Length: 351
Image 1 (cartoon, one colour):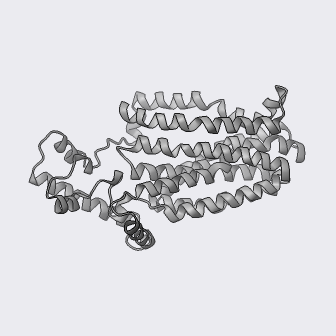
Image 2 (cartoon, one colour; image 1 turned 90 degrees about the vertical axis):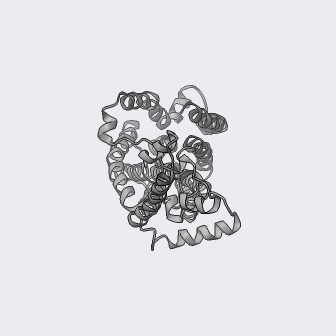
Image 3 (cartoon, one colour; image 1 turned 90 degrees about the horizontal axis):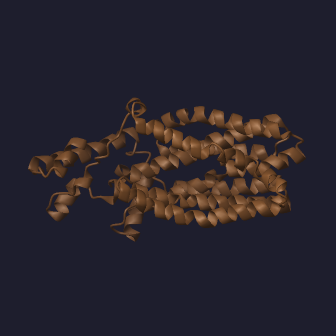
């Protein structure tokens, strides 16, 4: 595909290159049908897309997938550090756990998550993102109920592990893969729009904290579990693993064969998926990979610990945690969409 895309960019397109792109498009769809089992298990996705086409003709289904991904991100809120941190002081007060114990439980969950995400990556390649989200959601929601009924250290550690491993590093990770499959040239804008979900996650966390102060954290956790389950079910109704499964290409570009028949002209060069991908081994040999890795570490190394102990930090500053934490989360949620929407076009322009 890259060689064909290069011919288009170099201006050497001719009848043979058009035929190759058409053949490439058909082969990609065939591979998607074989690997992702689009022929039979995805009959529902194909039927759903036909209904969508009747309602919104000539509309890219990737926008629907993007909405489904946003709801998936919202469902993964319960495993985020800023949400789990809301339990710290409540576990200390109600379960008589030490602060060091709760911190250790969160650290164990993070370490286990770094291992489990390797397994989830293999499942993504085998089952596809949609099935991975469906299968991961069951133990994920079970972890939420385990937290709601926690009585000691073991249940807290196991609950944190399930929420972290299958939330941000499970269903959230799978949704990010879906966005990468459906958007290529518009990926920066799509990812920036999807990060608006972070604002929703922060608002949900603020609402959970207020609800916990009114009805108790156990009952509030059960309510949060129900909301997350509803979000996942709604998202699964919208998601589709790849655009090839329903006869589309990334970014809503027409399939070359269809474009040639309807337009009588050569398809645009973007029809060839000409992204330059690196294998893991190749990436490890680049300076950019290690620079990016260190940047992510420096930016995030203190954020998790601050989130886990935010209520205690507010209390040490003489603030009421029940009022200060929701206010901080609400202010963060209100400001983050502006940065997210500005970042997407900026990344696209720089790229």
